[in-house]
Amino acid sequence: EGEDGRVHGAQWTLFRQALEPGPQREGWANQQVWMAHAAVTTPDTHRFAERVARGGIGQAGVSIEPFRAWIDDWSVTAASDGIAELTVEAGGEDFAIDLHVEAEGPLVLHGNQGYSRKSETGQASYYYSQPFYRAHGTLTIDGDAVAVRGTAWLDREWSTQPLTGDQEGWDWVALHLDDGSRLMAAGLRSATMPYRIGTWIEADGTAR
Image 1 (tube, rainbow, N blue to C red):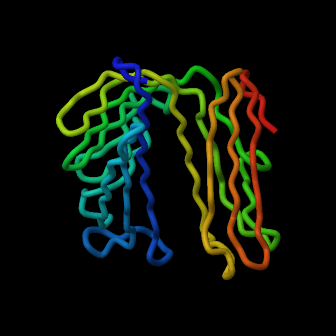
Image 2: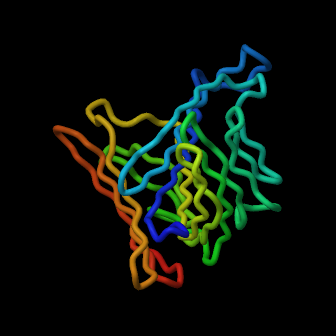
């Protein structure tokens, strides 16, 4: 929510995909490709931008301690070890995101202790969330900066498997509810074998 009382949204996503297996090679021979998407929304508008990069040349990457994920001048950066405090920066020609988030609850593991199945035939990922961030900072649209405060949610998911051959993609939602509970729900789209997953998260972080 902005100082003006209006509701705002912000989103930052970074994908990494390996073009082939094996140890990462140096420079332009590196087999990692990166894609990022950032957006801001208000009741009136949706602004977004995308970036693509090749690994191995410093244009995009992830460092662990302290944590930092970046592509060009977009980044998510930890204040110290772990991800309890993060700064999120991104933007496009007509918008910018500059937010600080602090965790007020535990990490949540989805599926079976973080092992999240995606089909009846065994496709799966490892998947956890930090759904207990409080956020504050600035969103800028068309040069007008607004101070905002609210809640935030971080997901991390990784896998060495694609979806099944007949899965066409997925629909996903994460909700902060008024009583302090949270909900993650997703549906894998398929004409022959749709698959649904979800996690109910109590206000104290207990998940099922």
